[in-house]
Image (tube, rainbow, N blue to C red; front, side, top):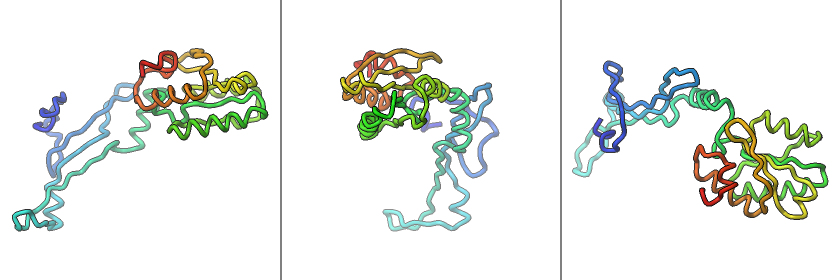
Length: 212
């Protein structure tokens, strides 16, 4: 409680719910249907150091018993990602999306430019992929929407000649046409949106890059 008070964080006391080996702090997360689950936790363990007979030499030269601290960042990793996926319905914020942007080449003639764009984006720390299916642009767009990719760009002759990208972004379950942005600027704005680690739509950042 003193640690939480020093941080100024609100908390509740779970009377009778403490572990037998020492005090702990649990972070509970509400899932998509309102149930509470323990995820992150940090706790002191006064039991195992005693059972294992653990000792260390203190600065005073005396032999002392350590205090063991257990820390679980996510708790059960499967539970954490299950709650995250259900709560977002797979429509992840840009910064945490497994695939942040997908490039949709109009034909194989434009694939080399897509590969250049993907390499530049990946060098900036972004997770970008190229649609690998031999399918029409309409089908590529449909699949990107089904996959809930936050950002996609159709790449054709216009974009290659201008060295630009024309984006469509997901926002509030719909799509926003961001329009054409020069390649270098597009990568910079995407990187800013990702680094911000915010729930703000990437469309807002691309349209108003100073907001990043």
